[in-house]
Image (cartoon, rainbow, N blue to C red; front, side):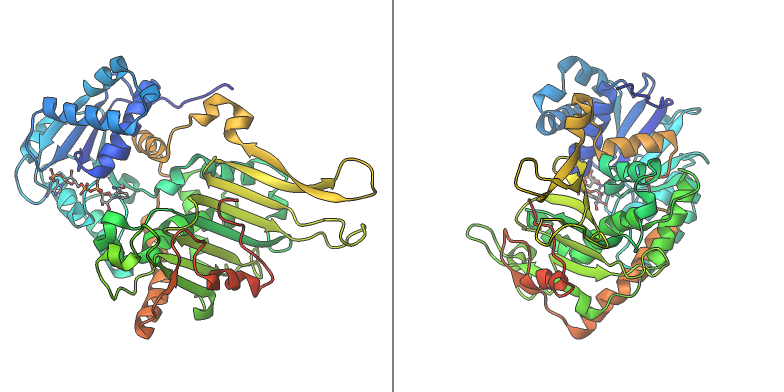
Length: 484
Ligand code: NAP
């Protein structure tokens, strides 16, 4: 396989929250992997920034520990770790005060790409934006990277957008949804728009329904206090599942360029019908044999927050009228799975006898585990005995189809950070997209609150409440088994 990697210019990347969990587990190991792959130029510099005062040497030692902890030994070597650490610097800074800002200002170089990763609590985004501006640290070409959650509802997302817009243009703001950085998600666009085969069939006439499942085996654990104010709708549906739905449902953009793609995604969100109360199932996990209940994790014995949600949505436009989208996400589920299933309709007429085994085609796009796609097609079962049909998968598991190189693709964070440095916003959410997603989400949540609706309890390690299965059964459809 010939790989064509777009080169990266020299850069200064400042990670606010450079000592935090996200920086240790994702951002810094991701940068190291890109460095080891030769993608980070010699004159690049990464500056960690957090409240604690420490020397650059002490910070490098912390980062070395994080790399040892997070990366398997086969993915690091002493020589490249040392060379990577030499690119690191550190500044003790207070996002809400004056401490450290002149220091940071001095460290920034002119004439290189400047990027500032806001890996801190969202309450500090405004303070950082304001001080970067006030101390004249961020030039007009500088980029800022903003982590989720982007607001808690439409009003807070608007406030956040307006506050960032006071200091930065939209072209400078990179709102991360790491789902968009996944290899398979981009492949979804390649498959849809790089082949003639799928696009003509990609509509209500030929597609029966679409399922999107993001199931996790973990509970809310140490994030209980945060999660209890959020729930599956805000934490997963409003952003990750909505973004996946957009990529499946959007019209072909004229170009693979940031605004062309994001314009089409926005139209999908705006075409979503309000969801009917009977089309939503909310669940909350109960205690398992050796796992706590959601309410124990959240430390609120009366919590009404959902840890599971299943819903049926309609995209009201010519392409999708009559083809429902079923979304499902939950914690403490049977298996860790993220996948999209596009179920085609049955052929309009069967020339074979009944019960020969003919069924509809299904395209499965797996984000996790085993990134890849498969398409079930019906063929004749080999051998004698008349015409019996079976479904077989045309398997496109990347690791198998494309060899080792494909198995070692960059993870979502690595890819997205390099896109920031390259100045490519295609895989980042635009402000109006985020607001449109909240505008759709808010009334659904407000209706639950008004009814004081309690979630349905479900067994840990299951597929969620039975009502979620019924949501599809009543339409004569069924979910693909989680972990099948
Ligand atoms: P965290 O572990 O609590 O780290 C927060 C970081 O912010 C620390 O480095 C902390 O350093 C620094 N900090 C706190 N107050 C500061 C101040 N006043 N001035 C300067 N630095 C300050 O948080 P995290 O889990 O890394 O999350 C960071 C962001 O990513 C949050 O917005 C979170 O929602 C988002 N996120 C995290 C994850 C994840 O897996 N962790 C996933 C998705 C999104 P000091 O204490 O030394 O100041």
